[in-house]
Length: 359
Ligand code: DOR
Ligand code: ZN
Image (cartoon, rainbow, N blue to C red; front, side):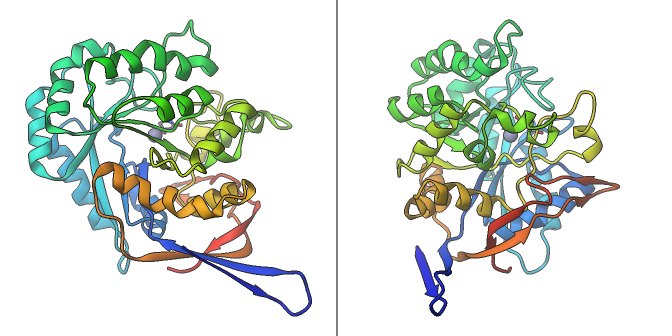
């Protein structure tokens, strides 16, 4: 990674640029149709590849659907940008093991996603009990297709802030004991419990961390009033957990890597009596991550987290191109076009200190 500093005459101003290997987004929601066409250019500008979540309506549960969805995504990539979608299947109680073989044979499906039923947006078709999926999980283990887990229990008796910690004990530890060779990504971790588990667990496990969980604690949802654009799932946690995530992301440990969980929802669906979960960060993900790493004085660990650990975990080649961020103040737009509605990006109207240079 190149870090440049040019000192402006006698002023103490420092202009810096960060040039690093082109990164990938290992957890992304693109939606479909006009919505997808509206958000895809943001991701394609910042990232070479992305693991695309399958929680469409209806969900992507077959290889054929995944291939058709990939085709629609590729067709929507703006001219001049180079972007490859990495597709996933949505695990249901009855996804047959043969579908895993088809997925693996296709070469175009990179993982299977667990949504516990009822955990989040479009999770109604999700898994009610993982024991129903054991034959399918066995096939995934045999064929080495990674398992991406939304790590929250859905029991309404469990406090929403504890759902990730309870998931580790009640679901993840037993699952990994039964499938010790299954490659698992603990998605969008939000707690010290998860960071500690991933660091210390045996076997093949990784974790993605979002920019918003690195930058904010749960106070952000309630500062001066209720702020729906800071509401996502798993929900932001208290400051001690954010600190633990920062420590994990900046540790240089290859188990932790970038996954934005950028999740577009129309403004009206967020600013509502029952608002949807999801933060929109695809526009400025790298700038947000850079801010978090800089605040932790860890820009030297930035490139490995953004660009190396993810492809290494998935067994894919690292990208050859580079991207550059420059220290430059710019204002995040108040809103972005999204079909016949708008999206409000995270930090809308506020100033960011890093800016990605074209493309
Ligand atoms: O906040 C979230 N939004 N969390 C998820 O798990 C799903 C996502 C979405 O699809 O909107
Ligand atoms: Zn997600």
